[in-house]
Amino acid sequence: MKKKLLLQMDCDPHASVFDAVVAHDAGVDALLQQSGITPDDVRDQIYGLMFTRGGSDLKNSAAFIGGSDVVLGEAMLKAARKSFFGNVRVSVMLDSNGCNTTAAAAVAKLCGEKGLQGEKCVVLAGTGPVGKRAAGLMALEGAEVVLTSRRMDRVKEACDEVNARFDVSIQGAEVANGEQMRAVLDGAYAVLCAGAAGIPLLSKDIWASNADLMRLGDINAVPPLGIEGTEAHFDGVEQDGKLIFGALGIGNLKMKVHRECISRLFQSNDKIFDAEEVYAVAKEMV
Ligand code: NAP
Image 1: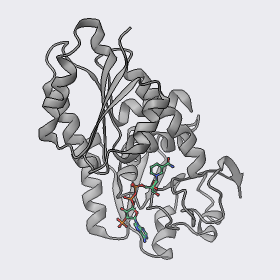
Image 2: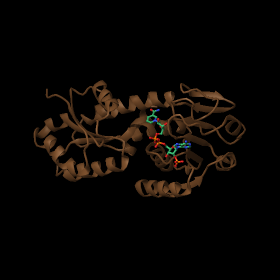
Image 3: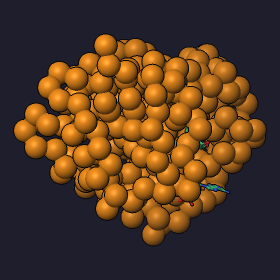
Image 4: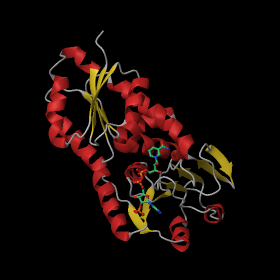
């Protein structure tokens, strides 16, 4: 039995320790860590995997793309796919900054059994990597998605990016004060706080008095939390008639999904785990 080898291609100067630990916990025998990788480097890295083990042994070599820059990560995934020919290929997962696994876990929790079809869903401070992925996945679920930012130019850029990537049509809104927050949440069924760590976004007087809001999620685990009056460990806790999912509640599922996707990379040599595939795993596991 050949060892399971995972090539960790990371665009940052130091490859992510977080991703390395998860890889080991997912059953990888040896990790080949490469940092400072650019899309131009990817082909030769992938060739190193493709040309060392043939036939059915190829499934024991796989690649993981990480690092803090999702745009670079996507370009790296594109370069990896371009390197393949015929069945000479390896399985690849993209999870720059945890964007796919975190967004997938958050949307799967907010979805619940009822789903989001036709529902207004708001992604607050959705201009970061996780927020954009979450907005795209919600739109694929049939939700009417509104992504917010403090600045209209950033809203537009993020919405254009999400709409192009997921072939959807999300809307944007500037939210820089309480009045704008109340207006954007009017008629919303679900809200996800996707702001930077330690940034409070949604005050309790606004969410608790909103009769339409049913499901609230927050991925910021660093106090103060994104949603005032909640706890990071909430995992579907009911408060004021709403179901609330905190960053640790979502994070537990994220960790399981991340490990599961890594382990599935080694089932065959043709798997690609990007947002949609990672989300399918999250929906199975939620
Ligand atoms: P990010 O890029 O760091 O930030 C997202 C957005 O937050 C920014 O684009 C910005 O939006 C807004 N923001 C920044 N500072 C702000 C401030 N002072 N006031 C209001 N808004 C502010 O976020 P990310 O990398 O996508 O990560 C999102 C969150 O997920 C973070 O809290 C991160 O720690 C967390 N995370 C959680 C898990 C988990 O498993 N639970 C995993 C990964 C990440 P605008 O400038 O456009 O307004």
